[in-house]
Image (cartoon, rainbow, N blue to C red):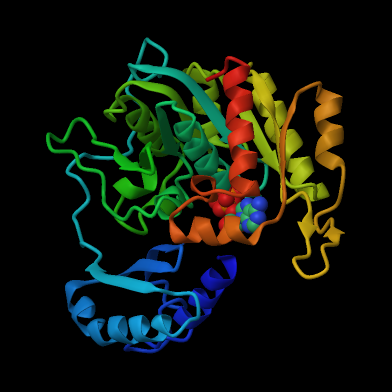
Length: 353
Ligand SMILES: Nc1ncnc2c1ncn2[C@@H]1O[C@H](COP(=O)(O)OP(=O)(O)OP(=O)(O)O)[C@@H](O)[C@H]1O
C-alpha cells in the first residue's frame, strides 16, 4: 500500500498546474488518502477563480492516477480556499487581570508538549498523541500555541477558520476526533510574526479561556520551541498537569531540551517524561539501522533526571507523509500507529489522562 501511495505522490509531483509548477510543488493537495486501491484527495485552490482553472488539472490527475497498478478508483475534488475574513474577535493585546488559574471549564487535564529546539517533531508528536488518545476513547483537545509557526491545521487537514459568531466566544474546529484550536488560524496571514510578549500572552489567555472547548479529558498544548513568553505564562498561570519534552538524540537539540526541562522545573511544572523522536532510521532496502542524529543522549538524560522515557520514535517516511497530508499516522494501522497507541496507553495507565 505504501508503494501505491508513493507512486500516487510521484504522479502528483508531475501534474502541472496553470502558472507553473505541479500540484505537489505548489502545495495544492489536501487530505490525500490511499486505501485499498481507492485514492481520494482535494485540490485546494487559493481562490474561486483559480479553482475554475483547476478543472483540467483535476481531470489530468484522475487520468494519470487511474494508470497506476493497484489503483481501482480515484476521486478528486476541487475547492477554493475561502478567503474568509478573520473572525470579528480582536486577538492579542495585554492579558486581562484574572484571579483564577487559566484552566478552561470542563477540561480535566492539561499537558504541555515542548521542545528546546524547533523542527524536532514536537507538533508531529502532539498531533499523533492527540489522535491516539482519541482512539483510546478519551475526549481530547489540542491547542496549537506555536504562534510563529502554527502547523496543526495542516497536520489535521483543516483549512476552515474558527468562528466567533458573537465576537466573544470562539468555536473550535474538529478533526479526526480531536477538538482543535490554533492561534495562527485566528490571525490574518502574516500578522503573527510581529507580535511581542504581551500580545502573545493575551492571545494565549483568549485561546484557553474564550474557546468553547467543551468537556475534555485532556487538553494538549503544542508549545512554540524554546523557553519564551508562552512557556513562562503557561507555566505560571495555567494549572498544568505536566509537561512532555520532545528531543532528537542530536547534541544540539538535547542541550536545548535541557534548557526547556530546566524551565519547566523552575516553574514547578511536573515533568511527565521525555520523548526521543527520530531515534533511528531503518533502511527500507537493506534493513540496516542508522543513528542519523546520534544515539543514546535522550535515554541518558531521562536517566539523569529520573523521569520516564515515554517513547523512542524512529525516522519514518509514513509519519512525514501522513502529517503533510493532514491525516496523522496514528489514525491508521502499523508500527507507528501502534507506537502512538502505546504512548497514549502509558499516559492513561499512569492516571495522567
Ligand atoms: N519521526 C519522524 N519521522 C519522519 N519525519 C518526521 C518525524 N517527526 C517529525 N517529522 C517531520 O519533521 C518535520 C518537522 O516536524 P514538526 O513540525 O513536528 O517539528 P516541530 O518540532 O513542531 O517544529 P517547530 O516547532 O519548529 O514547528 C515535519 O516535516 C515532520 O513531518
